[in-house]
Length: 249
Ligand code: FE
Image (cartoon, rainbow, N blue to C red; front, side, top):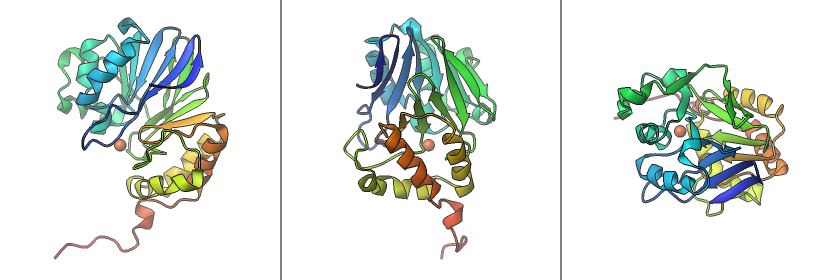
């Protein structure tokens, strides 16, 4: 477990080594405030039982009240049913994906504990801290949110800022880190315009660290700013597809 922010009544923790085999490496993040916990993007079936028992060491099961799903991908939502069955938590997901997740086998008994997040976002109170659920649509999913914790000044950025193939958990040399992000962002992020809208919004937040769902954390205000500036200059997705599609053969 890596502790990203540590005050007696408010903690941000990350697990970065629960993925195995051919699974894409993913980070599981949690905010624990005054004994109440929000788990963010808690991972698939094989990750969930490990994460659940590890969290038991820092927060009682009764404190596990909120589960946030940034979007509908399997590395995020595949274990939704398990989480809802073993906790009393409320889960949150973009309203766009509500009718799709029952296909992951979410029981009728618990499906009403998944709350739809409207396009404009929401505020979720965790132990008295108002966590801001902010829109990040098309980054990369069409119904996509991030979470900003104003107490620790942590931005949980989901797939935005993801890096692959690096063996360190925090970015210390930004220029050397770019190669681990570039291919992913150019191909998985569909729209340069959505990137620009996000950059404008992100610059209104006071950010001490950015924690994506894959790869390394931007651990300081300076590294977070460098990431935002890098994104501002990046062209992605459909805006790189100059040649259109062709039928193979
Ligand atoms: Fe994704």
